[in-house]
Length: 192
Image (cartoon, rainbow, N blue to C red):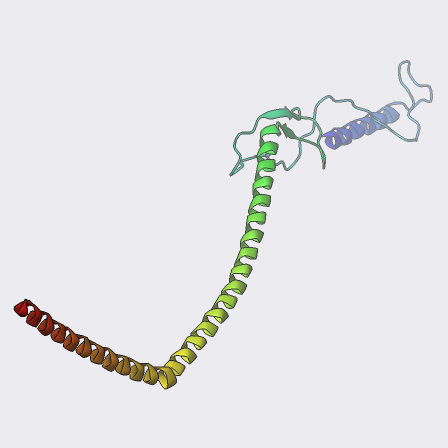
């Protein structure tokens, strides 16, 4: 807009100057007419207004998780902004508290995880020791069973048979003695 106005103004002044030179064939300039001399020509025009950008972008904030945002301050409409200029400032007390709570929860979860890992390693090592102890006990039981079957079982069976025979003989002897005693007491009862 300014360059077009400037072009027309220059053309108008050039035409005016050339018509004045052509009309003035005498060297004496008429009253109220100025002589134009060759030199720099400067036109100054003052306007009031504001320039808008050829491209603009809307600033939108749509948080997915934290929706409780309170605006603290906003840059005024039409103010020149550049890189690093704060456009919108929010109250951050609630979200800062939430972030601190989340950090503490995360640290607690990390400690729980490391404790669980340590317990798992202890469990793996102790189960290996328990397994080795169980295998050793099983091996000893197998050896004891083999020793019992090879040596003690036969002896125990023979000993049990001998004890049975001895107890049977003792029982037969006691029964015979009882029988004799009964006969003797019956004979005494008859004689008295």
